Image (cartoon, rainbow, N blue to C red; front, top):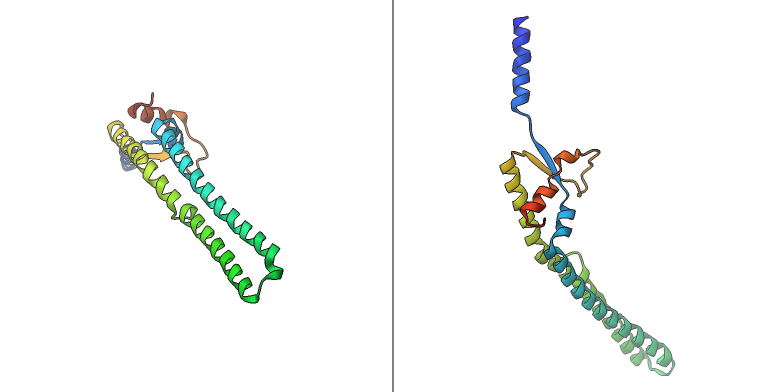
Amino acid sequence: MKTLLLIAVSVLMFLTAHTQKVGYVELQQIMEDMPEYAQANEEIKRQSDLWKADIDRKFREVEDLYNQYMETEGGMTEEMRRQKQQEIYDAERSAKEMKDQKFGPEGELYQLQQKKFQPLTDRIHETIKKMALEQGYDFVFDKSSTTPWLYTNPEHNLTIAVRKMLGLE
């Protein structure tokens, strides 16, 4: 009986000693509250709109070349047709390449987003790390990411504390 009691107390002490403190934040909310985020978003949108206008112009040029070709095709020699078709093909390829260069997976838009947002996310992560260390949290999760949280107790939400540390409140 004493052995069983000793084992139970030991297990209880072990579990108590290994209790981990967990909290969560909503990174997207924090980012959206930062004036720098809104400014970066506006700069990215302006640049993206400029690129989109250039690309749209290039595709309209392709369409114009094609329409001209269709109107004059009957009076062209075979050589003239091939040249005009090649011109249309080259213009279309150039427009597609520009679109990929600007908006592709590793394109200039992606790079601009990284350049503008990375310093903000680094600042937030450093603040979270500092707060977690100061307040004894073992784990801090991002609730706004794709993690499958079924329930979160609001008392463990560190979002407001992080926002205060960042000077957003």
